[in-house]
Amino acid sequence: MAKEEYIKEAESQKRYPKKKWEAIVEAVLFTMGQSVELRQLAAALGESEEVAGQVAEQLKKRYDREKRGLQIIELDKSYQMCTRVEYYENLIQVAAAPKKHALTDVALETLSIIAYKQPVTKLEIEKIRGVKSDHAVNRLIEYNLVHEVGRLDAPGRPALFATTEEFLRRFGIGSTDSLPAMDPVQAEEIRSQVEEELKLTMEEMEQEEGGGSDRESVMKDLNV
Figure (cartoon, rainbow, N blue to C red):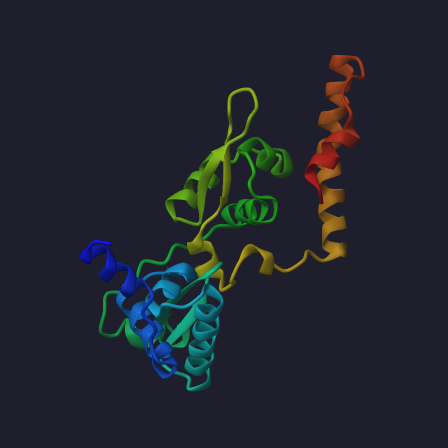
């Protein structure tokens, strides 16, 4: 084995004292300034991803317990160090205020549909909302809350959209699995509203196409 390869292999197998693990994770998160994947933290520690996750969680709890100005947040199998929200007003006294994008009701409605049905096409979004959604989707992409994740294997190859890591950061959730379940009563209200909005349109289509439209299949696609 060549000397360079031997040194590289030895460094990859290097183990660090357990008492230094939290400090190592803290240093990596602070230096990177963005989300760091578990595999990267594991590489920094020279340990498994499971161990890296445990260390990151311990550090996260310590920051919360001590109410520090910084906090550790988990973002879908990655961790990031950032300013604690309650100190935002203090921060902007000495720094340029970060640009915060205000979301309109239309943008929030569109974002909710994408979050719960992702990956989803614009056509599916418009089918649920009942109106064109190009502007809302484009604005969410501009705000880095939504991005294109692929193409549907269908005529025209429509783009598929899903939420981003910035969406998780902004709404304070670790992953999309942590999204709150929709209230059954609210879901039924939405379904009733959509049915009412579609009723006239579907009847017109049935008259034009000789009864060829199936309203139930449309409602099944909505999944509400």
